[in-house]
Amino acid sequence: METSVSAEHIRHNWQLAEVQTLFNLPFHELMFQAQSIHRQYQVAGQVQLSTLLSIKTGACPEDCKYCSQSGHYNTSLQKEKLLAVERVVEQARQAQAQGADRFCMGAAWRAPTAKDMPYVLEMVKQVKALGLETCMTLGMLNNEQATELAQAGLDYYNHNLDTSAEHYQAIISTRTYQDRLDTLATVRAAGMKVCAGGILGLGETQRDRWSLLCALANLSEHPESVPMNMLVPIAGTPLGDNEPIDELEFVRAIACARIMMPRAVVRLSAGRSSLSEAAQTLCFLAGANSIFYGEELLTTENPAIDTDKNLLNKLGLVTVRREFTSRRSAVSELDQIPAPKFYDAMAN
Ligand code: SAM
Ligand code: DTB
Ligand code: SF4
Image 1: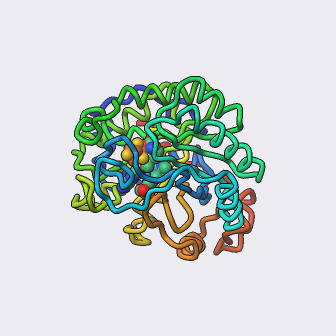
Image 2: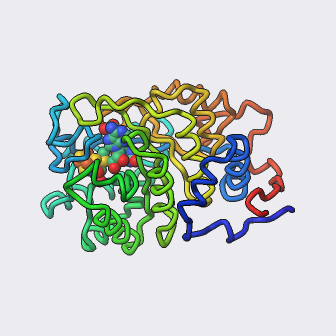
């Protein structure tokens, strides 16, 4: 049966058992379903590029067991106070020149203080004035802060659920899962786009992965952006010696995110430096259509820009700002490619 874009795929009532079945499908079947959804709801072959900057680094009062920036662990990280607005704008300009279309600013805070707000608002205004989309991740927000950020022109706010509600207590004790859900609701109510995802490799079970995916997909509106991070183990943190997870598990999680949140842009986020080209390619096939672009994430390494450009070109993927990649094929404009009709694998 052929179907057109259909609202039946946009659901907020996912059950754990269903996600278990989806996650454990034969790999080729899972990939087929993910591709089918991807091609109905996303522009196939297009990848969005976001560049990250840490605007305030380290000495964070939170105790997230994975994080280089928590003040609770000795990670030999160079701390830095809030950067001057001009330095942030300069970095944004460079990111734009290198091809990014969104600039994401992250601060190692539990929540911004009243003293910080005028500076971050100014950063949003000036970065946006360059013609870039803006994103910030500053910890928890109250209604007033969220409204101010939205009025300054902030497009996206990143705040991750990180893991399942069940595994959460083993990872963070200084704020609750409900605190995170509350911040996401506050961001949504202020009219900003929500960027919310998680990390795999925190010692969670498969069930925790299904539960995280359910928690994200069962939000009253799906996040517009879903970053999928693979733990970057940081020496000195409690998770510094964690074994890397099976790459195919990560690909499966991306495929499920694609199927469960068809309209979201799924970002292949932290951990890309340790993934082979082949594994990243599977992530793109599974439905990832955004990456962090630039040689550093917040405090850890990311693939070099030339490495990423080569990979995208090799795969024939184009970026939202197309002048930064070229298609291998003779077709130069995505719009010229006729929209294919797809068998709907979700219908029985
Ligand atoms: N302090 C803010 C907060 O936590 O809300 C914003 C910055 S925090 C670094 C943003 C996200 O980066 C975290 O929620 C987590 O998902 C991800 N992250 C941090 N350290 C990581 C690591 N070592 N490996 C993978 N992802 C990580
Ligand atoms: C997200 O989910 N991943 C990014 C962004 N949101 C802010 C952060 C990744 C951080 C990786 C570890 C680091 O560089 O410190
Ligand atoms: Fe602080 Fe964010 Fe790191 Fe947690 S993840 S320790 S809140 S910077």
